[in-house]
Structure formats: C-alpha cells, structure tokens
Amino acid sequence: MTPEQFKMAKAALGVSNPELAEKTGLHRNTLNKLDKGEGKVSTVQHVRLALEAAGIQFLESGDVAKSFGVAIERKADSINGE
Image (cartoon, rainbow, N blue to C red; front, side, top):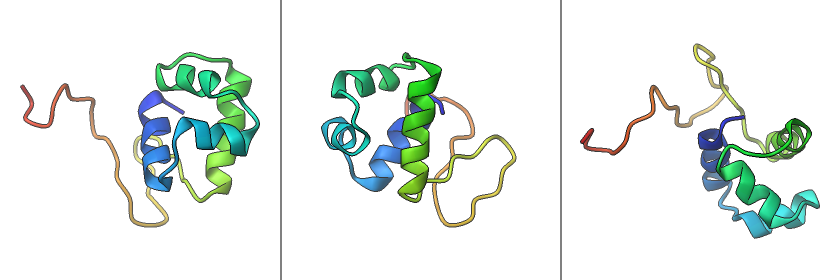
C-alpha cells in the first residue's frame, strides 16, 4: 500500500487518522507515518487489511476494479501539470 493509496482509501471511506486509529487500535501518530510512506511492514499490512475489510480494493498497475473508483496513472505535481 503506497502513501497515495492510503490517503485515497481514507478519503473514499471518509475517515481521518484519529478515527482510523480507533478502529485499528493503532496510535494516530503511527498512521501519520503511513501518510509519509514510513512505518513497519506489519503495520502497513494491518491497516491494509482493515481498509479492505471496510470495502477498499487496492489495485496494482493493470488490475481491474470490482466496482467504480479512482486510480492514479502517474504521480503529478499538480492538477494543471505545472
């Protein structure tokens, strides 16, 4: 799970780090680290499983979604491409 996927998953569910911390039993500072791409592999897996249980589907390049959604083709600095 990339930091971008983590942020998009939270946005799709409408949850903040404090809310997700309560649901996962983790400290919100731990989730703040995931926002920056930091954190233990076991923590990332724990959070990913919790998000998947809430209905999030994580896609790798070339995967097809089971439902509607949003995907990132490539990382851009801005919407305008500037």
